[in-house]
Image 1 (cartoon, rainbow, N blue to C red):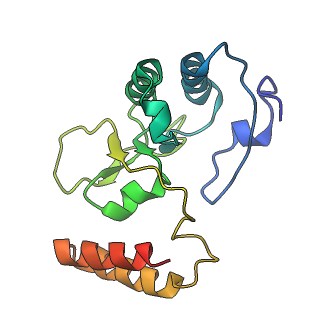
Image 2: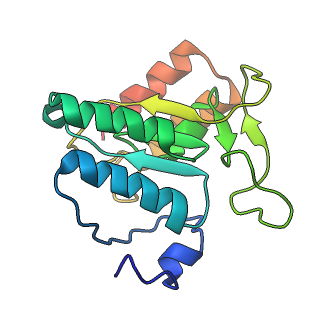
Length: 177
Protein backbone atom coordinates (compact mmCIF):
# COMPACT_ATOMS: atom_id res chain seq x y z
CA UNK A 1 0.00 0.00 0.00
CA UNK A 2 1.08 3.54 -0.66
CA UNK A 3 2.20 5.42 2.47
CA UNK A 4 0.85 8.61 0.92
CA UNK A 5 -2.71 7.21 0.88
CA UNK A 6 -3.82 8.58 4.24
CA UNK A 7 -7.30 7.08 3.73
CA UNK A 8 -6.11 3.46 3.71
CA UNK A 9 -7.86 1.49 6.46
CA UNK A 10 -4.48 0.31 7.79
CA UNK A 11 -3.62 3.93 8.58
CA UNK A 12 -7.01 5.15 9.81
CA UNK A 13 -8.16 2.26 12.03
CA UNK A 14 -6.33 0.81 15.01
CA UNK A 15 -6.39 -2.97 14.92
CA UNK A 16 -6.77 -4.83 18.21
CA UNK A 17 -5.79 -8.15 16.68
CA UNK A 18 -2.91 -9.60 14.70
CA UNK A 19 -2.50 -7.57 11.56
CA UNK A 20 0.31 -7.20 9.09
CA UNK A 21 0.47 -4.37 6.60
CA UNK A 22 3.46 -3.15 4.64
CA UNK A 23 4.35 0.14 3.06
CA UNK A 24 7.52 1.69 1.71
CA UNK A 25 9.38 4.77 2.84
CA UNK A 26 12.22 6.13 0.74
CA UNK A 27 15.41 7.02 2.58
CA UNK A 28 19.08 7.55 1.77
CA UNK A 29 20.32 5.07 4.39
CA UNK A 30 19.18 2.92 7.32
CA UNK A 31 19.45 5.67 9.93
CA UNK A 32 17.40 8.04 7.77
CA UNK A 33 14.85 5.27 7.20
CA UNK A 34 14.44 4.76 10.94
CA UNK A 35 13.85 8.48 11.42
CA UNK A 36 11.24 8.53 8.63
CA UNK A 37 9.55 5.42 10.05
CA UNK A 38 9.21 7.10 13.46
CA UNK A 39 7.70 10.22 11.90
CA UNK A 40 5.31 8.06 9.85
CA UNK A 41 4.25 6.02 12.89
CA UNK A 42 3.73 9.11 15.05
CA UNK A 43 1.96 11.24 12.44
CA UNK A 44 0.15 8.90 10.04
CA UNK A 45 -0.95 5.82 11.98
CA UNK A 46 -3.98 5.63 14.23
CA UNK A 47 -3.39 4.53 17.82
CA UNK A 48 -0.52 4.83 20.27
CA UNK A 49 -0.68 1.60 22.29
CA UNK A 50 2.38 -0.41 21.23
CA UNK A 51 5.20 -0.35 18.70
CA UNK A 52 7.76 -3.02 17.92
CA UNK A 53 11.20 -2.43 16.49
CA UNK A 54 12.99 -5.41 14.98
CA UNK A 55 16.73 -4.89 14.63
CA UNK A 56 19.44 -7.46 13.98
CA UNK A 57 22.46 -7.42 16.33
CA UNK A 58 24.87 -6.86 13.44
CA UNK A 59 22.95 -3.69 12.56
CA UNK A 60 23.31 -2.44 16.13
CA UNK A 61 27.11 -2.65 15.75
CA UNK A 62 26.90 0.31 13.37
CA UNK A 63 27.03 3.39 15.64
CA UNK A 64 24.74 5.40 13.33
CA UNK A 65 22.06 2.70 13.34
CA UNK A 66 22.38 2.12 17.08
CA UNK A 67 21.95 5.86 17.67
CA UNK A 68 18.98 5.96 15.29
CA UNK A 69 17.29 3.06 17.13
CA UNK A 70 17.83 4.73 20.51
CA UNK A 71 16.50 7.98 19.03
CA UNK A 72 13.48 6.11 17.70
CA UNK A 73 12.75 4.68 21.15
CA UNK A 74 12.90 8.17 22.61
CA UNK A 75 10.79 9.82 19.89
CA UNK A 76 8.10 7.18 19.35
CA UNK A 77 4.84 8.37 20.92
CA UNK A 78 3.59 4.93 21.97
CA UNK A 79 2.76 3.65 25.44
CA UNK A 80 4.85 0.53 24.89
CA UNK A 81 7.91 -0.05 22.76
CA UNK A 82 9.33 -3.54 22.49
CA UNK A 83 12.58 -4.29 20.74
CA UNK A 84 12.77 -7.60 18.79
CA UNK A 85 9.47 -9.05 20.00
CA UNK A 86 5.74 -8.46 19.82
CA UNK A 87 4.50 -5.38 21.65
CA UNK A 88 2.05 -7.64 23.48
CA UNK A 89 4.97 -9.05 25.46
CA UNK A 90 4.99 -5.94 27.64
CA UNK A 91 1.39 -6.56 28.64
CA UNK A 92 2.11 -10.21 29.44
CA UNK A 93 5.03 -9.28 31.70
CA UNK A 94 2.54 -7.43 33.94
CA UNK A 95 5.23 -5.32 35.61
CA UNK A 96 5.37 -2.87 32.72
CA UNK A 97 2.65 -0.27 32.41
CA UNK A 98 0.24 -0.84 29.52
CA UNK A 99 -1.74 1.93 27.93
CA UNK A 100 -1.78 4.55 25.23
CA UNK A 101 0.83 7.25 25.03
CA UNK A 102 -0.39 10.13 27.23
CA UNK A 103 -2.38 12.93 25.67
CA UNK A 104 -5.62 11.42 24.39
CA UNK A 105 -8.94 12.78 25.60
CA UNK A 106 -12.61 11.79 25.34
CA UNK A 107 -12.85 13.41 21.90
CA UNK A 108 -9.93 11.43 20.46
CA UNK A 109 -9.51 8.32 22.61
CA UNK A 110 -7.59 6.20 20.06
CA UNK A 111 -5.77 3.54 22.18
CA UNK A 112 -7.32 4.70 25.43
CA UNK A 113 -6.77 6.98 28.37
CA UNK A 114 -4.69 5.85 31.33
CA UNK A 115 -2.78 2.64 32.02
CA UNK A 116 -3.21 -0.80 33.52
CA UNK A 117 -0.64 -3.11 35.13
CA UNK A 118 1.89 -0.51 36.38
CA UNK A 119 2.60 -2.63 39.46
CA UNK A 120 5.60 -0.42 40.24
CA UNK A 121 3.06 2.39 40.77
CA UNK A 122 4.68 5.12 38.68
CA UNK A 123 2.66 8.32 39.04
CA UNK A 124 2.38 9.19 35.35
CA UNK A 125 4.02 6.55 33.15
CA UNK A 126 4.75 7.79 29.67
CA UNK A 127 5.94 4.57 28.04
CA UNK A 128 7.33 1.16 28.87
CA UNK A 129 10.34 -0.10 26.96
CA UNK A 130 11.28 -3.78 26.77
CA UNK A 131 14.52 -4.93 25.16
CA UNK A 132 14.69 -8.51 23.86
CA UNK A 133 17.47 -10.31 22.04
CA UNK A 134 17.02 -10.80 18.32
CA UNK A 135 15.62 -14.25 17.65
CA UNK A 136 15.21 -15.71 14.18
CA UNK A 137 13.35 -18.73 15.55
CA UNK A 138 9.56 -18.90 15.25
CA UNK A 139 7.51 -16.87 17.72
CA UNK A 140 6.32 -19.17 20.55
CA UNK A 141 2.94 -17.42 20.63
CA UNK A 142 1.96 -18.30 17.05
CA UNK A 143 -1.12 -20.49 16.69
CA UNK A 144 0.98 -23.10 14.88
CA UNK A 145 3.33 -23.62 17.83
CA UNK A 146 3.14 -27.27 18.85
CA UNK A 147 3.15 -26.68 22.61
CA UNK A 148 0.94 -23.57 22.66
CA UNK A 149 -1.41 -25.08 25.32
CA UNK A 150 1.56 -25.58 27.68
CA UNK A 151 2.81 -22.05 27.02
CA UNK A 152 -0.69 -20.69 27.63
CA UNK A 153 -0.97 -22.56 30.93
CA UNK A 154 2.43 -21.32 32.11
CA UNK A 155 1.49 -17.78 31.08
CA UNK A 156 -1.75 -18.09 33.05
CA UNK A 157 0.20 -19.41 36.06
CA UNK A 158 2.57 -16.44 35.82
CA UNK A 159 -0.29 -13.95 35.49
CA UNK A 160 -2.22 -15.38 38.44
CA UNK A 161 0.81 -15.75 40.71
CA UNK A 162 3.78 -13.72 39.42
CA UNK A 163 7.12 -14.96 40.68
CA UNK A 164 10.58 -15.56 39.36
CA UNK A 165 9.90 -19.29 39.28
CA UNK A 166 6.66 -18.94 37.29
CA UNK A 167 8.48 -16.62 34.86
CA UNK A 168 11.23 -19.22 34.43
CA UNK A 169 8.67 -22.01 33.85
CA UNK A 170 6.87 -19.89 31.26
CA UNK A 171 10.17 -19.06 29.54
CA UNK A 172 11.22 -22.72 29.42
CA UNK A 173 7.88 -23.66 27.84
CA UNK A 174 8.28 -20.89 25.26
CA UNK A 175 11.88 -21.87 24.43
CA UNK A 176 10.81 -25.50 23.86
CA UNK A 177 8.49 -24.41 21.05
